[in-house]
Image 1 (cartoon, helix red, strand yellow):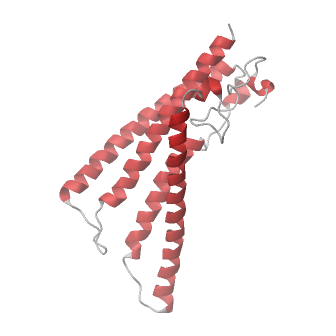
Image 2: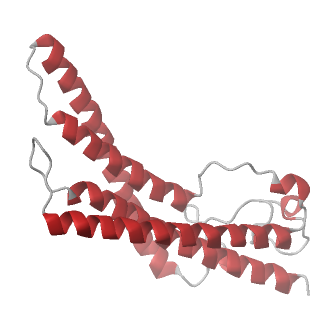
Image 3: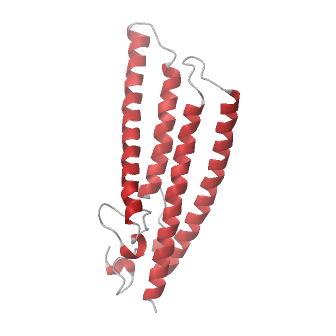
Length: 204
């Protein structure tokens, strides 16, 4: 990130026009935003690896299941109905873990119109901070509903029709995915608050 993009002459390590990420990118630690949280980010890298492995394994398994179902249905005329349950199970795990990973990378789709109109880095950071707070509140609400839904299914002991798998296996994807989004949303807000403070102090 250059000083021109930051619209500032002296603050080199705080993002202005480009959005702040909740975690450092690679080994580069932005001191004013991510400094002092080394142990947390070291543990988080292990968490990120676990998410990538989970998504990779689930996507490969989903593809193999689809291929197996096509073969069994059309080649040997003996479809296995359990695949109709396993495929959505793998899909929801990919979806919700992927959603959390997008929050980590800040890769959600966004318009980016704000940077065309607003050139002040403090204003940009403040607007993004407001948006991050709103998103975090929404995710916490969704997490609360997901938790109640999982607790309801668990209390009934609901199981799938063919494989007789506990329904909480599907529900846990929501709980873990939304829980990780809350975690990364909190890190996002912390990073933006620290970035906003750093920009304010630099203007003094």
